[in-house]
Image 1 (cartoon, rainbow, N blue to C red):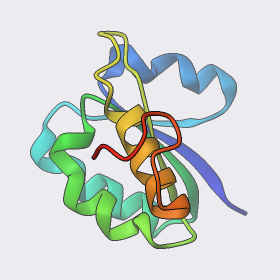
Image 2: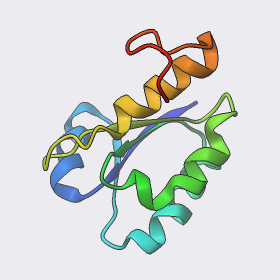
Image 3: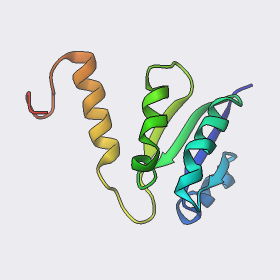
Length: 107
C-alpha cells in the first residue's frame, strides 16, 4: 500500500501528522536528498516538500520528475511562499502545452 510523506522544517510540517501523513523533519539540508531517496524507495507515492527545502534537493527532485511515482509536490511553509511551486507548475504546463497559458511565451 502506498504512503504519503511530508518533508521540511518541523514548524511547517508537524500539523500534517494529525491528518495521518508521515512527517520527516529536516534539520540538516545536507541529509535531505538521502531522505527523499529513501522515501521514494519505500512505497511513498506522494512526497510533499516545503518550498524552502526544494532548492537544496533539486537534483533529486529532477531525477524523479519523469517517474510516475513518487509525485513530489512543493508546498509553502510557515515562513511564506517563495514562488517555487508556482514556477514549477508553470514549467510543467509549458512542457505539456508548448506555451505559457498564463503569461504568454516568456520563460
